Length: 133
Image 1: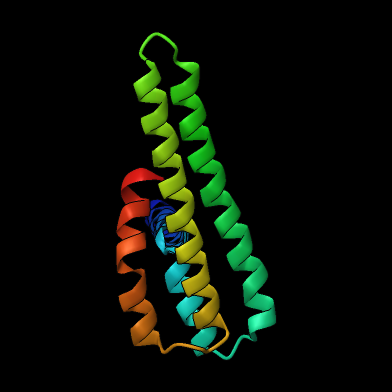
Image 2: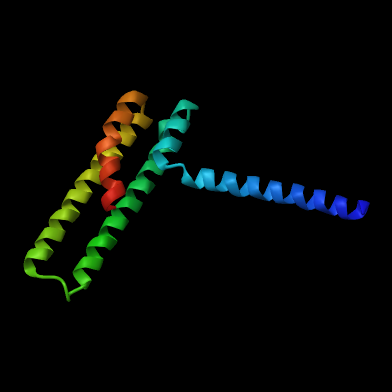
């Protein structure tokens, strides 16, 4: 009986640790780029280290937008001339918003704007990106 109790305790401890590790991984994976950027700026990370991260994230967003446009263009069953012009405009709007978003991030990383201004300035592009890109 004592041996079974010890196995149960050990299994319980291992399960608890595994659950904690999974929770921490999900918590970290769920944190968005902007929050990580804020944390890095708050901890004093220099702009010359942050800007390449921002550029990489911007490139990811641009690639998602290109893939979305390409998926529409390649689906010729549903694409008319007017549709292609509309999707091209969506793509241009995406690129404009992504550029604005990246620029705001870089300004914050370079400490040209405050955290409060950064949070306020990214509301519109962030909401747009969550919907479309």
